[in-house]
Image (spheres, rainbow, N blue to C red):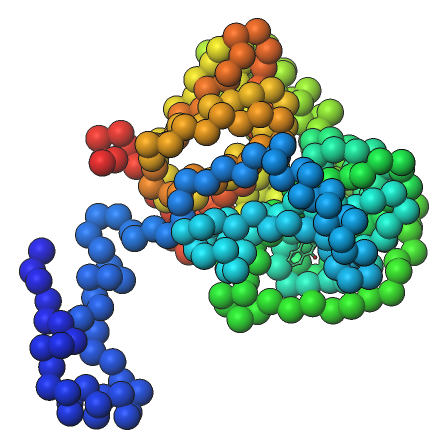
Length: 350
Ligand code: 1HN
């Protein structure tokens, strides 16, 4: 590739004249913004093991009362993006949230979309636009853009969950803000209760609701059953994997980030081709080795890692006799909408 002129090659008075007019020459920066063959990637392969995080999270419960936190979260930041940016990848925010018995995280709504993957504890719930969603280990609960949400806890032990948000990209768009609200009234008759499983949707008098976010809670028990059914009935399938989708139309359940669950059969290795999206892996049950970009992360229960885009990824079940269950997040829905989503064949991956 042709080497291009540098900023220092230009006369100082010319550079000053450009600056005075808020102008910048393109050519000294062109190779940086359009590198050959593969983007410049800040996201580093990073693991956030749960065991060392847990005592720090519990300590935050002693140090900071709910009134002083609103949401008591330790953010899982990728060092490649500098920690204060709160980015696990270019588009993905990850945090581990703690709610203690009796606590309440007040109602608000905001433009970024969130999901919660429940990690431990019983008795907590999220209320979303009046629908009360109980939290159990492995459940996925959506709080899409613009929907009121608050968290409560009637149980006896701490509850912890993983928050995944598209905050970095919505913030980058200068479109991120919050509105405070009053405690919601739980609506036991919410029509959304009819969307508790895929395959059938309410259609009174043949009218489909066409709701943008009809299903807010994806119980782990159902997801696990779906994975086990695939493993049993399709032993030849390359990856036992299900996507979290909108039951009205089968599209991704949210518009920016996409979510899936994977089952690795005992001893199984799954090889993903390099894709343009960074990926997050969170261990729901069992243990998995995530190998990519020269790193090997051994995920145990509730561990989370992030792998940058354009890397091949091998997932290996660390057990020869029990299955491993992994939750994934990526920004494929966004990249597909932008038209930049790519899957690279093995030959095309350096
Ligand atoms: C938020 O609203 C929650 O509602 C959690 O639990 C984490 C991180 C950034 C911005 C908003 C919640 C968040 C958040």
